[in-house]
Length: 479
Image (cartoon, rainbow, N blue to C red):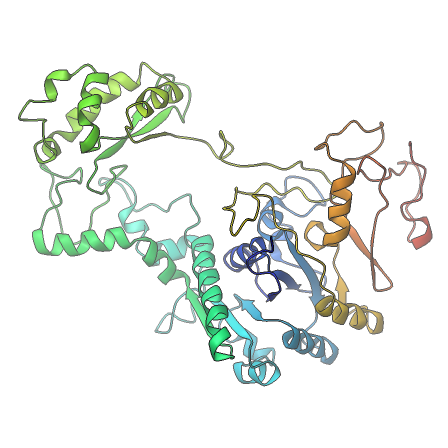
């Protein structure tokens, strides 16, 4: 079955996280994403926070797999000509430059529309139109300006930012939805349009529950489900509520067995009204089922601290997984605190120097797609333009080396050669490489030759490296 966005070409001018998140989502849905990077540098995240020397960082690969990449010097006439040819071929241009940068490149909205009236231009900015529209914004700035930090943390402490990247990745998600809507509208209008996602607005949209509470607080002056009730005081703004659920079903993070030595030996426990009776029986308090101080939710709200302290005495006798297994039998909402690489949280791929090493979150299958990373079919038009420009001026447009610039068809064929995930049973001396690093030789995308196991043909460490195309991939192999 074809992918949802198959046939859609994305010209990707984004960098760091917010924009690449958007274009990666589109690539997962089947779009052909062509990433444009700075000559000699590439995306800044290629070299940031590296854990393996001389390899694209995990920060870069986890946000840019499934894309193809070229470098173009837009300041030179030939580079600008190349970009204009790409604009004619593509459906969507995505950018997260500083305000006005695209105009300074000569790619104004009017110019883009004259080249391709169907082109959709999508942008990520820090702030929307207004007094702060020219200000620079990063993840934590967006969280603070969007209202998240003011409502995160405990009442007696400072505002806190969250570990989840709701400013960058959250805005990228909003922009991707806007692009898909614009593509759908283009079917009837026949024309492109501008799409803008401001990071402040994206965070604010994700804080909608707190906006609800702000309206309630303005009218009632009190919120009974918050830990400040009944002994604390409420001001004019929604207070920080710690780990309280902030909804109609009270919840808290409770200690589990081993919490003294394990920083994540905790479980989130929700005292849903519908399962109050089994909760009371499990924790050894059957008398609370009919007791007037505990039988109804309004009666329990002033006593939440006492209730969760009692429940915690029970959870400390169980590991978080044992507690979850017991509670799930009675449909009691709960969840263990999992670390980043915890059970089922991340599907990690093999990491190696030679090619892709990109763990990525599991994705939702769409329209019959599998949960595998989507591989685009090879489309020649945009890259053919880049290759022609390379042959005429290799300094201005060259195909980059790296995990996300591989030839999709060739990479798929190599995967089929080695069905066993690395490390496979390969002869000594060969390095695992399911996804070989492509290289450019005189404008032609080539790949290191591979052995039948799907790994690189090894090079003896004592042999000098040569730039001769004939000698590449043909050095002594142990096979």
